[in-house]
Image (cartoon, rainbow over the protein chains, first blue to last red):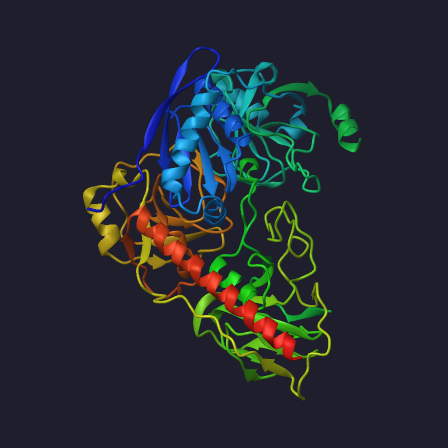
Length: 255
Length: 326
């Protein structure tokens, strides 16, 4: 059997301000890509660690970085080999990058927690904009009003963006309303639709097919391709929802 | 100062080497499927490597040049013809206003690139010319090229005609990637060890077919279903070349339009140097895989970069001396 040579190369403890130390592994993922990996769970300490690492790396000046992509328990770094070579003709990526990453993480560790953006998003939970609200309520044994209250009273972290440009995976949704996604996705979900899939909630930035249970719609544009910051949300944001009426929805939408 | 689509092809779009820096927002690279050929097409003309080209699949478009242009075609060979006469790929060609380009028949490869000297006069979006079809943005109005679209050139060519000809090939040529049908080389990935030993052997010893529904997002690779300790993962970033193991035991190789994140086990990565060959792989021929080390893969990619640099230097010299003679 061939050797599998891209397993964990290093593991270092990363401390966040709460005093918790999380072990972070470094793994190659192909020639010019590596991931910093925490234990594979969706939970707040891991999320805080990932956010912390992401912020450190974003502010670093490692040459040749193409993308830094945080997700639930990973931060993935893509390198442009030519730019790397231009800066370090004599040091291979393997020999040069790992010590750099370790140094960044060690020197910035324990500095403190990242100050995440706090964002309030209006949602119209009217059944005309929430095709799954009543069936979801029946499914989980609540009234529609209870579903709305529970959803609007939560605070959600943006773990990552994916699936569609600007689609933010947020959690955790209260277990009482955590209904699974539809077995058969809808052919067309309206832009702005707010959905639930197990303990995640998300907003469809553009009209698309989709399987999440739709419980409302926001008039705020999540996807603004004409802007240099094309997405309303970014990883690490802390999001709260507040209910609005249909007339308020239209007011905001046409503003 | 443009070219016109006389007849649209099956999937003609504006591509460069792809968009980076926005994957954390869910915005994928969407660059060329075969970035080696795209860069070759540019370098033959003295363009920047990453200049925008027209990416084409077969059935290919019919194109008319509405101004004089220095062009090159790289990647697939579908017997390109200018006003009915065959020309070769990987060679700069000076074409006169009014000349029509069409492709006679597929000979080899699946994706071709058309470059013009100076590039196309279109705007970048988030740092790249590449079309994002999903959000209908960038490239040519966010869309595939259609009949009668006039794609403008950035540069005008003046008084370049030495004789009474409709087109003139320039005497320099780029090479092609060697052994296009050799096994596709992969690096074993994080979840390779979830496969049973027999499945691990199967990947290296059996052949797979490339399903026709494969597209710019991913290539579906079908064989005897791979068995093992299958489980889905918490989603994380994926990239061009990630080989995912699907719930039905089959494989998908993520290509240029891949989503930015995914939760299927990733058992391997197609090495960077072989992504162009995979992009050009004929649908009717079986695919085989070979595992190599990450270090060997880096070596192969560096060699490919050297080929491009050599082409760049050779062209700069030729182009300069050619222009001097004029």
